[in-house]
Amino acid sequence: MRTRILGFGALATVALAAMFGLFVVPADLNQGDAQRIMYVHVASAWIAYLSFIVTALAGIGWLVRRDLRFDAVALAGAEIGVIFTALAIWGGMMWARPVWGTFWQWEDPRLTTTALLLALYIGYLLLRRLSDDPRRRATRAAVVGLVAAVDIPIVHFSVIWWRGLHQAPTFGSPDRLLHPAAPMQFVAALLLMLLAVTLAWLYLMIRRYQLARLETLLEEAARLGRLRSARASVARTAPVDITAAVDAAAPQPSRSTSSAEEPAR
Image (cartoon, rainbow, N blue to C red; front, side):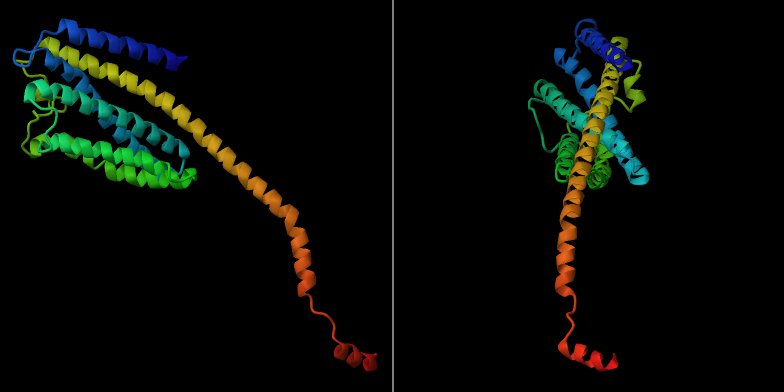
């Protein structure tokens, strides 16, 4: 019930944030209405960061505690993170076309490192499909998730460390976001959208975690069922095979031994 309330609240907040960004906030003086894409672009990037950080932390939790619930959280975070990373890239391309005159520039460090981040976590999800053993799969995924998480700060600070087409980070830079020259409608719309997508992320995480736990329990039940069937099959066939093997391997008394024992008796 609480999850449903959260879902309806997230949906209402997203709708409110979208209407605020589309109809209340004035168009940018330089970029025009194209700047409105920024609200979706920045919010999607924020959720991607958050999701992948949760995946990395959950991977550490699995490696330390060996509890498959951590792996379920990691899977949920990775899947949601991939979706929002793709959405952030798409929004960035739609924003870049009227502003930069092109959809993509590989020379831009932010674009390149973000594409790498998406590829890493797609690989993370593909790796999980290579094993039917939940525990082995969780261990491999945890290691890959931790390695891939190294790219998160690289993506965020790439616009500071290297020159490119991107502007400085919008969130994570309070001096930019809360600059006196920034219109209050802009700040309010961005913060409202961040709140909306965070609520939506929380709802999606809960639902995907629940589904992942169910999938893991079903896998464990199926694996135990196969193991019990194999043991039952061995138990039915082993006595016959063992008896036959013992009879065949048992030494037969020789005539010399029998004749040698007769005088003794």
